[in-house]
Length: 213
Image (cartoon, rainbow, N blue to C red; front, top):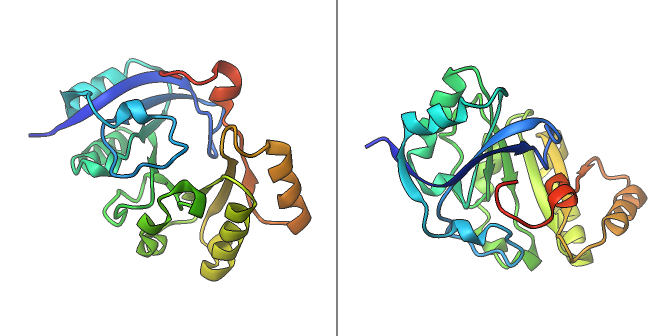
């Protein structure tokens, strides 16, 4: 059956990535095999309700925006996520996928913008990184490092060099909320002249830690 377990579908401003600030429909899938210590969507690990893909699309279409983000949890933990992504692209939507980097992205529709994490040492899930995924990234995709401290920053910088990541796609550095001061991370980036985009979570600045934003 073409269905997915959904935690929530909501309309908000994109808080991160290249389309930050644009009104966006978020489709949050339930379930995640990772347990990053800084996760701010633990409520999406369990629960949710199964919905037919056509019903999900109908809900998303109620909002007048071309931007749709499929997120989680970890969306790719549900195989039918690939079907949803393809159908959204077929409708002409500008679709992004927020994924942990621990699951195979090779079958994701090429029209989708993949925003893929690489888990740092302090995330607690560094060993889950699927490094083969890097080969399937396109110039329009983005790699995100959530930085929890100087150790994470130095590790991310090393991995950028090792895999020549800046030549593959855009790189995002985001301070872990409550762990790293944004100005401090900005200072490190400027000192080392890294070719990365520093980002803060706009939705948390506007509304704090709560669901549906």
